[in-house]
Length: 499
Ligand SMILES: *Cc1c(COP(=O)(O)O)cnc(C)c1O
Image 1 (cartoon, rainbow, N blue to C red):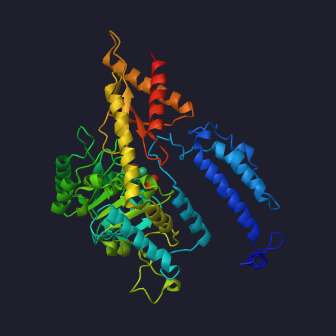
Image 2 (image 1 turned 90 degrees about the vertical axis):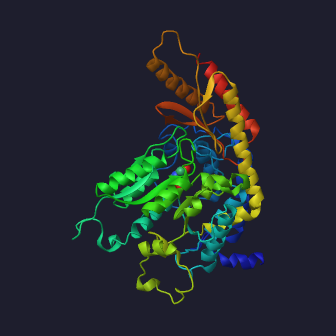
Image 3 (image 1 turned 120 degrees about the vertical axis):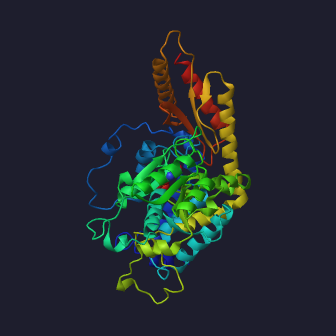
């Protein structure tokens, strides 16, 4: 296309259309240059933002500009004001929560998704968006070695995926809840019960709230010393509930819990679900990605018996936020729970195609499969596995330093790439056990804040059996052994200052 022709595609800025093509191209290159520099050196920023509350906002005009501003001015503010006030999840020493990555092919995918700007609510509103989702989810399913009858759908987050899974599980009871609701019914419902371990993610409880089941619908089951659901306690709870007139309908097992990445005994739980005819949903938001590594496939042992499973490519599969996959072997039930087609959305190819809007509460759907597909193509199964394998190696290496040190200890097993640990200086003579434990919690919290304040590394914490545990989570695509070593150095420096 000649310059003059491309000019015709866009009106120029003085009239009513979009930015002209020439400017789009120029700023596009400039922006890609900026992003490329940023991703090559995220360490130029403190990983945990040093911004104080309200500080950033005070630098941005509080009312909108009457006349449009230049892209130069806007991009300058991105560089000068926004980037310094972010916490940098791209930083290779981001070890808090679960570290994530927006890989380059994923970023390109997002860029194209924004540019195409299709709404994949129906197959016909963008055939490739619907069909690429099917392809991408089949590829991912094959990489994770899940059974072929696991069909799937992409949502934004695991919280939403799990909410839909619980809605399908409830629909599966055929209690006419979709039509009649749960309150004010002629034949009242018993309390519906969902089970999950004490270590389960808060999204399960939020799903119970959202679906009107109520928080009391969730019964938390105790865990063993390695923070895995106790299947015997689950059976006991189900038996108790049944004799009390409660209606058990769903169990949520977790592969990779949030605090410690423990793995519930899914096969045992699946047997219990089969026996009592309960829906088994697996929360593998973080841990599912590890099944891409051939020698780690065992982390999904028993998941072939699940009714649904959520995994988040935006967590540990190098796909930009947001992208969560719900696999389900009863898509018809999910559809029954949510399909509601107004006349203006009726199409004549309904029999042959999938319409994404039928499988959830939202009508409009972003083209999220594009970035996931591009990430899988660019790295390949082996490339993805190699990166996840390396993250696990680094976590084990860090754990070995903790174990070899007299003053530090591990607080949980390390099945993936997260290490839970703490500093444990000696008991003072005559110090009461209670005071010693309080002192350890205090010291570890102080060490964590001191390390985070350096801007060189960012760790988070959790509480395990009332003890404060530091969490070092490896998951960023740029993290190397040198970064993990530096974090260990920083921890030791700041621990020494505590003595
Ligand atoms: C991260 C995580 C979630 C929540 O994921 P979102 O996509 O942020 O909703 C749920 N469960 C587990 C086990 C997780 O690790």
